[in-house]
Figure 1 (cartoon, rainbow, N blue to C red):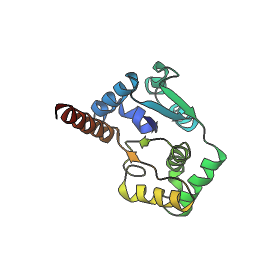
Figure 2: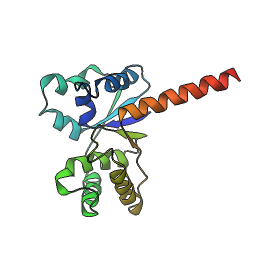
Figure 3: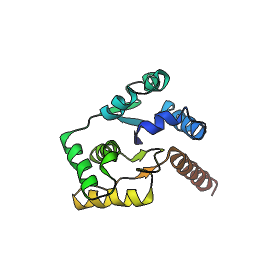
Length: 163
């Protein structure tokens, strides 16, 4: 599973409110069940973070991380989200994360940003713009939701095996 992560997911590892789910999420990466998709935008944002947060991704191998770039196409799509008033201009970086993930056709984008990203009204807005401009819809979830979906899938597999 290819999952795009924004900066809040890395920071969530060090936040009491999100550390348990973030830790379990990154364990899936370590087991090879998730390939992290990270952008140069995320890496630039991490430069402003404390050293332990900034260097967090260094422990993963090239097999566990796919690096992608903020392309001109992604910048244009991000500007469309703002033009269509999905969010305001102050949320440009969030829009760029959404656009990169959309263009790279990841399986899901995960974030702990409830105000501008993991928010039903915003998700509908991003996907409306995506469809209007011939892009696919983007699944947007929290790391906890991904883990819950994983547990449900494992439970269903066990039930199928016992039948």
